[in-house]
Image (cartoon, rainbow, N blue to C red; front, side):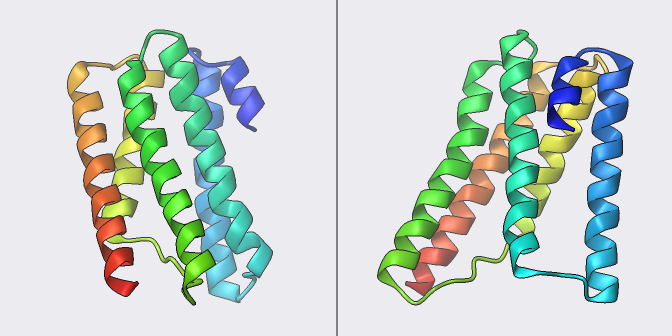
Length: 150
């Protein structure tokens, strides 16, 4: 779905495809939890797919001049820092589970709203500042929680 969304970026079809992808992701998660259809593989692949879509969209929207590159650096930098930190903790500790935090979920929600607004043609600099604030705050909280577990 990501290539199709990127191909149609800036069109109503691109926005519709993004909304459909988001809805089917929510439905998939709901059904998996409701009926116990969760798997270890799915627990790894679903967040990777979600990050691939959001990262691709942030990069593409910056390439088109809709998002500033500093925003892409903040959003992707947070994800890279969390991933590297998790890998380090897995290497040197017994920690294996890194559940999402409420702040992280809020940050993702703000990122989605920012992408939808941009794809719908409603952009202003405040979306970027708010998105960056949530990304930095949730990343800092996530790191602090993991350091305390260490």
